[in-house]
Amino acid sequence: MASIFSKIVSGQIPSHKIAESEDFLAFLDAFPITKGHTLVIPKKEIDYIFDLDDTMYTNLFLFAKSIVPAIQKTVPCLRIGISVIGLEVPHAHVHLLPLNSMADADFSKKIKISQEELAALAAEIRSNL
Image 1 (cartoon, helix red, strand yellow):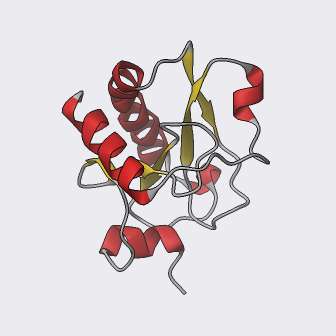
Image 2 (tube, helix red, strand yellow):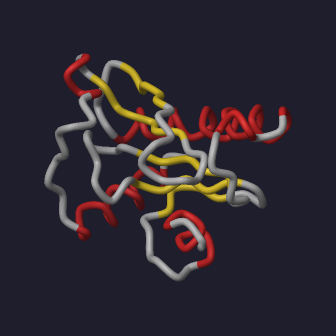
């Protein structure tokens, strides 16, 4: 069965895309913990990040790194944090998190943001790429 992220890649489920390449996709988290919380995934469905081959693993992080300046231009923050947990969706992914304090990295707390706000935020981040 395809993961929710594979369904996003195929277009079966809508998302607020930030950037896309042949191998990777970045989009806003639908249930963010901070404004600008972005997910970066390989398009190929591989469950565990450490099962990615070395090239894909390296390129995933380079792709994620390329998006960080646009998020920083869009969302005021001290830093963009990065997290890899890997339990919530069986598809390798990286969280990019605009942070102003350690409390901003609390995955047990979600912020409320409308689909319209997510769409506008994604467009603004894309414009800063």
